[in-house]
Length: 324
Image (cartoon, rainbow, N blue to C red; front, top):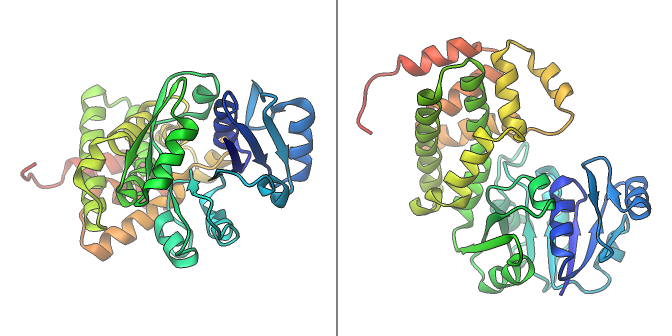
């Protein structure tokens, strides 16, 4: 099987490493200098240092060359900001998966909504779930979910990645999978704040549980199935991102709890923390649908400098009692 993975960040490179045990992989990097360095050194020193690239991974900065072999599956491992442009350039019969999670800046659209607008005839879907790139690249066990209304997209993803230490589950609910992937980053910031303030394990469990309820409400309002949020893209990814030490969004919350300035935190991270940019859109879309999301609203207020970390906790704790 031939795979084209477009995007040579940590996650794209990790999937290339995992898939190369069984398949030929073309890995496209936007930056020619990065592509040349990776092809020569056989390592992604910037995003995945210390992990050797297998011989079956061919790195290139030429998009047409990455697609020249006629891949059986194309995987978009670019940031959400690049998804629209990439989908528009991939019109054709090859099934396409994207890995990015969150909302498009400006439009506030999720991936499936972008695809419907700019590539309505494309056979496509999303691959998501609880997965740190470093662990996948190291060959540690992980389980992901591929979501698409088209059976051949789901089948091709299973054929490509359901081997070795990776398990791939199938879903016909891309809306739910995408909402889970977008909202969990915002909730991970809240959990980082909770842990940074040393509020205890009881508070963490309550926050994750009520956050899951918020995620589910928004997803169902957008047309998702409730049961999706009890699965890998909902509860699974939320628990990982909210509690895992490799989570950038959790790290943002921890540093906010210390009283650090958001701009300084982002400079220190050096990588994108999607929850910082997704919070506003989550709140906007929830408001438009009449969905109550107090944790997400509180995180947005914190990121905007309208409250500090302790004031956020007080606002949440003072809410009126209600039925679960």
